[in-house]
Length: 249
Image (cartoon, rainbow, N blue to C red; front, side, top):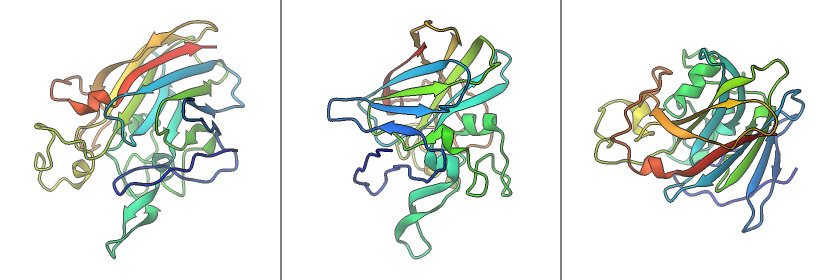
C-alpha cells in the first residue's frame, strides 16, 4: 500500500497507525486527488464522496458515517486514524517535548464519537488504543482534495442520512476565542467547534450527486453528541471545506 509522507508542522495533525486490514490509499501526484477506499469487503453499494478543500483547510480531523432516518447509527464509512485509535503523532509530553503518544480529545468529533457509541474506561465517548475503530474504516487524514470510496453493508436501508464531521484545532475567531470558556481544557484545543455536514441520500446505484451542506456544530468541549444548529458565529471553519458531494455506485 502506498502512503503519503508529508512534513509535520508544530500544531498539525497527520494521522498515523498500523493495521492488519488497512485502508487503500492511492498516492496522488501534484494535480491528482487522493483516493481512499474503505470497507472493501462490504456487500452493499459504494458511497463515492468527493471533498474539495477550502481556503482555510489545515490538517483537519474528519469522520463520515450513515444513520437511518430515525437517527439510529448504522456504520462509519471513514474516520481519521488518530481519533480511531487514540494515538496522535504529535502531543506534548510531561517533559514539554513533542512526540507520538496517546491523547484524549473529546471535542474533536463529538457528534460522530457519540453516535459511534463506544465508552472508554475514562468515561469518554472515544475509541482508545485497546479498543480502536477497525482499520477497514480508518485512514490518514487527507491533506487536500480527496475521494472516499466506501462500501456499505448488506441490509442497509435504501434511504439514509449521511453525515460528515470536520474539526480544525486552534481556529479562533471573535466568538470562539481562547478565553471564551476559562478552565475548559477540551475546548482550548478546539476553538470553533466541529462542523457537521449532512445529506439524505438514496443508496441506489447511479443516484446523485448529493451536495452536503453544514447543518450544525458539535459541543465545544465534546460533552454530548448533539448537533447545534446556530452557525452564525462561525467564520474560517466554514472555509475548511469548499465542496462535498456524494454519488452512489
